[in-house]
Image 1 (spheres, rainbow, N blue to C red):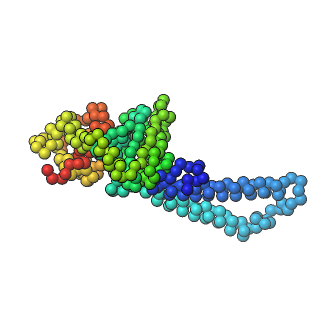
Image 2 (cartoon, helix red, strand yellow):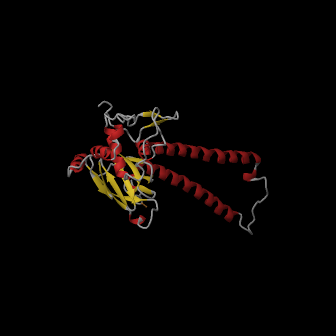
Image 3 (cartoon, helix red, strand yellow):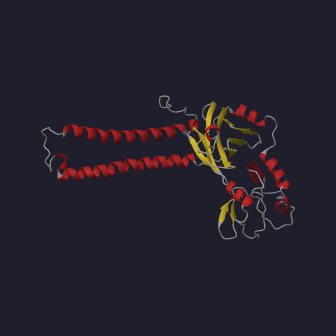
Length: 314
Ligand code: CUA
């Protein structure tokens, strides 16, 4: 049910849940609004000027006992309703931002005024995103300039895309077809034209599509950058420089020099590359130079994919 055609189709696993919450909220607001305005109009007509009514205090609704009962009712009933709504919405929110572990990861780089996507196989696309039907997809998103926002109404998902950090979003498409993608954050002159489409394909056709043109995988491209930018000079197995090993690092906790610890996720690795002084690993000198401004966002994503691909043992 897409609400009598008023809403876009429900094309993701989360869409019916989001619509149910929206409908419940709209219903609750409608009941309150009609209740208040109905009483207001009713009383205004009933007690209008020139009509003989009993207007003395201490009667009817003003009776002291009834008075308290009514006050408790209008305090506790909305409180119970709002707490129930909060629990419901918080549960859905947690679901929206907790991707399942087996999700297919796709990198998204936003830029005035286009969406660039790169799949782990290295296949790239602009303003279009191909995804498989019925499989969770996690987007790791960043921006090269302003703040953008990735919005797919048919999937009921939206998240800001920020420069200098990664944000994630996930969905499982439940309908084949092509769906609108919008930028939902004003980002400059052509903001209104910054959009595209999400193409949902059956898994077999998607796999074939992914391999088309025999692209170089992100990890392989990252390995090339790793040498090209001199990372291997210190971080390679054979290097004699005292630098942290990157093997089996991805997703693991890292002890830092100032006693804190961090999880080696995309954001941590990105910061380690562009802001090496921020989280110095325990037992090492802060000698790594910053690569800020020297690497494009998709090159950083390639490097992270390469680090992700490194097995714990050589
Ligand atoms: Cu990008 Cu608005």
